[in-house]
Figure (spheres, rainbow, N blue to C red):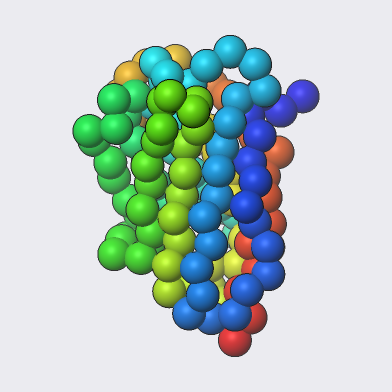
Length: 124
């Protein structure tokens, strides 16, 4: 059972924007670092972005730097991924994850909670 719930995925054209949201099914994300990962068909899951619990530290995968922005609103218990200038190569299932620490991480194995994913499809 997914412990995080993603929303905001969809089908867009190249150059468009989308904003993904992630909220916990229960409990709170306030004290947890969070991350976004994605998996394209036939490929391994890859790191997209991560943010510390405070929001002061943020890191991005090379393929999304300058186009994607991770943020969080702890008052709303939500983590966001703003995706601009989308490309067909961004087509994937995007997963939200959280870890029982305040420190951001790019490693899949560091995360304790996952969502079921939301599909993002970018057409050319």
